[in-house]
Image (cartoon, one colour):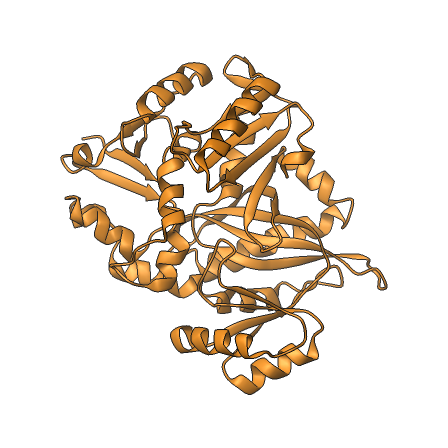
Length: 402
């Protein structure tokens, strides 16, 4: 019998994984994001798959998108899913909270990962492994980056006071959370933050702050049997606090050429090949799914080479916006078309509706044979209650949407 393939968007994954709790309750903003962007997997899932989402608002939107882009996009609701057999489930990321949720709606545990598998994901999502990998990726003088796992107050104080600027990270966190930017002074506030993180996560990660020029990533897929292969490049933007905002939609070749204005292409290719080997050993024998390695181009104005690669800022052991942007660029943009994939948030739903209507009027969509030539395309339905909007804008001056 054929299996049903189900995709789930659970953007609270990093926070749920960090908590380690089966009864984890996501903050309101994460729950709102999950609701507003529930059908985002439609743009990267296979044709035969379904999204787990409520039918309200979503069915009509997906029917329109299916017709416009010449490929099926369908959903399944929780009551329908619990009556299915032979299910394969692909969430944004696996954690104990999601496992409990799926069991509670009646999914047989034989279709779900084991608790020990989720514990392995939680183990290797720890930033200690990113710091260890970083040290092995200092391939030559075109590379930079240090990270330290510190576990007592004297070490925290010493590290902060030795650096004009530094960044402290909770070992388990994500999406711009769990970060503490420091400016050379070990304040009582920083001390309290470090103590809380140390108590719950047995240490903190400390890094110098680098003069970042570009954010980018390399995306991979692991089959769980020791084989990790390269999926593509991601060129993205973050806000001042480090939270994701957008991806440029370019071909792999265009991103590689863009990055080569800073560092030689050979160094990027060498790093890619090295990561395939490292990740195959570190994760490839158990992890099944997409993963991404966030990186930076850093500027050293008084040293040569002037630009260097920070090869491992984060390991994202889950589906991510970089992989999503690769599907968007490769599957939905006509050849030679470039654009931006962006997610915006407002506490006021009327602001989201205003942005949507403005973009729709200012950048009318044009498609040809199921691919975008230019214009604005929302990736999710916009309702009077929407606080989040995910969209593509192509063939226009999208510099304002970084």
